[in-house]
Figure 1 (cartoon, rainbow, N blue to C red):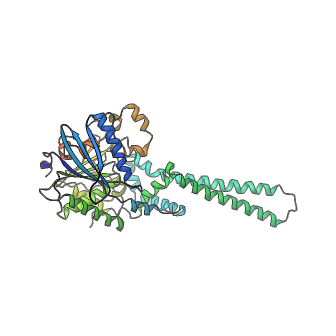
Figure 2: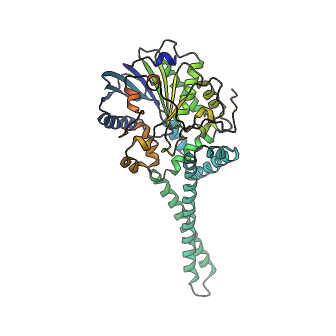
Figure 3: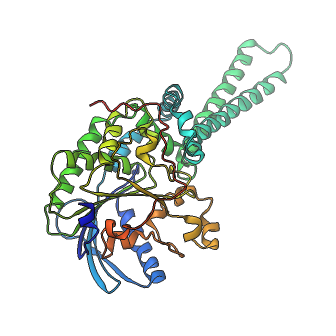
Length: 419
């Protein structure tokens, strides 16, 4: 089927975007697409415009473009699981610190952390960041507690000899109470300012995977089945391509959803081209854990299928992704007849001008979303040409070789694919 897909032109496309661990309403993705597509169109000299989505279904928008003399229409939908994310983040401060201990123990005791460090340091540092930041916040709060307590006790020490012990004890208790108030208020302030620090957000993200040892919680499995039904329905429509985009942790959700669809025979032989674009993936963070049998089995299966085209795009400049790490191979589940994914780099340092790169270089969270944004010196990766242009994913990258610097050796300690 991949060969047949490579010969298709696209006039109508359905696009399903699966976000990563993100609690925010999907309208942010519409606004990002609107502003960044306009910027890329001006740079690359093509026309693209958005209009409201018509009909029922998931949150989305309609796109009409004129590229290379051809007109293409695309309906883009966001497959939302932000409610599940928000529920998983609805924890108090003590519970978050318990998550820290439990998550650190999961990755260290299983050996996953050491193996992950053999791949890329950037995403491992990103994973350790919330641990370090939360411990730093706790340390600051503890110091504040003792500074206030000791300060009040020094006042008590200045009282004349013979002061009743009841008064001295009361002063010490007052100091301890004042220190406790400062301790709690500081921790609450840090949490309130997490939009700046991202410590709680990232801790909840990694804890969400670690809590189940690499397996999906039942509520997420239910949502993934719903997503699969939505994609299967689109594959029955009169469109030229059904494109699934999985960003960050949304990439491993897409792997399992698509593997299920193909296993169940829900991909029509003569239907639309089925394409899968994984962006900024963090698959090893899950597949290296001991109970990730489901994901490893799906990676193994999907990588050898003719029913789809799978392109994996990352960039070494993205410190939050496992850049150029073949998610199938590094997970130790590469089959003999492996075809996918085609792994290559978005090459941020080359596709962004020096001025733009300088402005973004230390904005790590923003760089993790650069795949969805405009490039002022675009090479062969253009998110808007992929999602709204006249070529299928297979045709666009039919002759694209994989990046020579990709990592495609088995690293994971756990390779079980038990059902």
